[in-house]
Length: 103
Image (cartoon, rainbow, N blue to C red; front, top):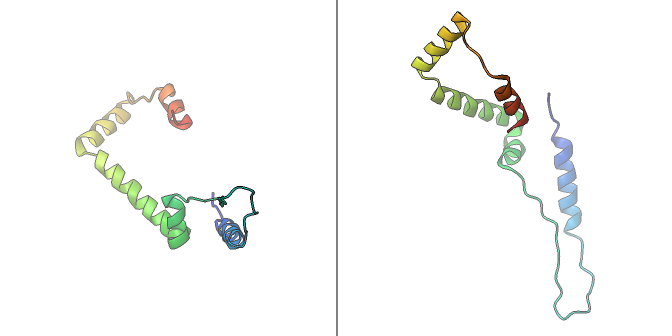
């Protein structure tokens, strides 16, 4: 699945351009308060904007590989291989559902 962020960035840029021309209406109070909308982008969105989706994908894959390498000790891998080979490897369905639902 791919996501086209160019259209989104075009909309954000148009909004930023148009919002800079907005002038607040005069109020009857002595101090005039100017309310402005703000937009905050996540680190991932900023990475896509600067590196492009390909650059972001590469860095995300590198981070995932690093995380996998950190928890993949030779002993743990050997134990998993043995459990799979013997047919005793089991993941409780509740754990799978919780993982899918983000619980």
